[in-house]
Every structure is written in structure tokens, then in C-alpha cells.
Amino acid sequence: MNFGKILFFFKLGVAIIFLQTLFFKFNAAEESIFIFTRLGVEPWGRIAMGILELMIVIFLFIPFLVWLGALFGIGSMMGAILAHIFVIGINVANDHGLLFVLAIVNFLGCSYILYSEKENLLMNMQWLFKRK
Image (cartoon, rainbow, N blue to C red; front, side, top):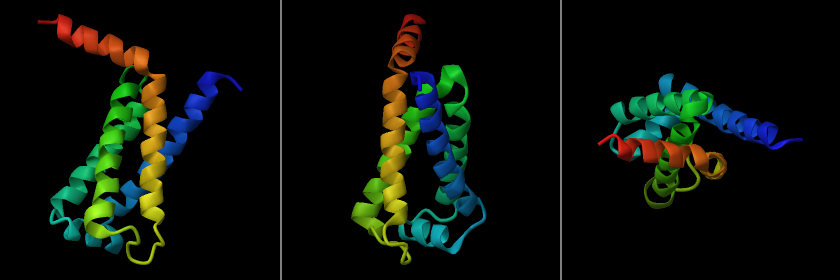
């Protein structure tokens, strides 16, 4: 199995997790409403996170935006992990920590994707700063 296939499966796995949680956010599932109410940002925070997660999934499959999707994914999952640790708890609505584990898995997956896209990230950063 070559590197390109491994990276594709990482992207696919991360995307599936984001799409699954996105479904619950946009359908106003009780668990999502509970989480974002505890964070004090219901309903707009839930909807905004859903939009961000949809953008992440789309960016992961656009070759020149993969790095941006991975970067946004790392940021959103870091927020989710910290929210679980400091505000909502690890076990949310008797899920036995499943959402917390999914956040960690996606954080690690996005980190790997970003690492594998480091050349594209550096090229884009150079291009950004040369535009001045």
C-alpha cells in the first residue's frame, strides 16, 4: 500500500466522523443541544460548528486546500477536547466517552494529514507572505 492510499484512508476516516457528528448538529439532536447549551452557545454555536465541520470535510478532498481542512480540523477538535475536559465532561449523556474518543481520533487524524501536507502548507504560507 502506497503513501497516497494511506493518506486517502485517513482523510476518509476523518471525514466520516465529521459527517456523522455534523448530521446530529444540523438535526438538533438532544445530545448536541445538551452539549452546546452547557457551553452557552446554543443554537448558533452548534450551527456554526456544523458549517465549519462541513467546510473541513470539503477542504480535505480539494488538493490545494487539504492542509487548511486539516488545520481547521485540529483547531475544532482541540476545542472539543478542551470542552470535554473542562466543561461538559468526558461522559456526555451516557455515551461512555465516545464523543471524547472520536474528538481525539479526529485530532490525531487531522494532525497526520497536516503533517503529510507540510510541503503544501509551507508553499501556501510563502505565497501568502510574498504577496505584500
